Length: 335
Image (cartoon, rainbow, N blue to C red):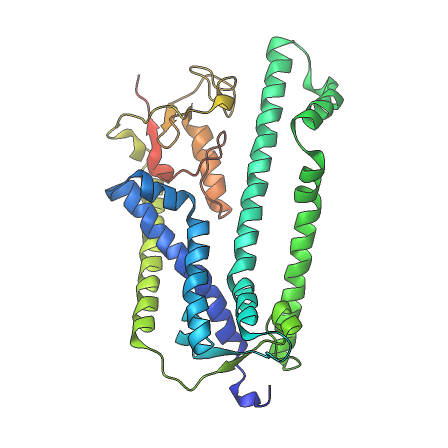
């Protein structure tokens, strides 16, 4: 970059990167609140269940138009940042597509891979659970003596090479790319490079500070997003405080549970009166509103609490379905 004075600070670029992730999360929270508390239909549910796809497409269209007209993304414009494309060898429109992939495509692919990895793990757990149940309860054999047979059984049920890649090599690849990204940011911060990311380095794309004044519309938009995130945080913390202050919060009014989640895989797993987590008679039986499955109260609460403490989405331990109602959806069943 010819003029170092217009080179953006690392903090500015990091703020843009963070805000790009913050906006979809805020819209997703608004949609989730709408579905669980106010209004729900199959179209909104479809949008929520495929939110990553819709968000990526919308981001792509909006920012493609912005880059085409102003050389800046929608959020980048708010931080007075624009791109400088070297179109000597590659035309400008192709460089814009590369920039969109760098800003949104990589995160989209990563999210899909992480979700796919979680689904594979749940599938493996279900296979193992069914095998152990059949082995111990129906054949009267010991699990420890049949581990080799279980490995052969698994090979018939899943693509082993696919699992090996997703659980052995994918985490290493992801970790390596993250280290490379951190090193490039450090080099950028120290002034040894004008490229914030690896893709920018390969295609000769740079970012610079603009002297243009931010539009009031984009400022208002970002303020609204910030307010939504604050409300989301407040509601989560407020609910947590309520739980800690009362052990019987879920014992008040008991609405009728939703119908049992209709999945063929559950037919051989779920038994009447038995908790699917501990495989014992359900103690203080609690229905999960989003799936209709019944667990011990302590079992399902500990499961969700562990997910929350690890900043994971709250999901059913059997179906891997996202629990939109969260802890609010745990309904204790009175005899």
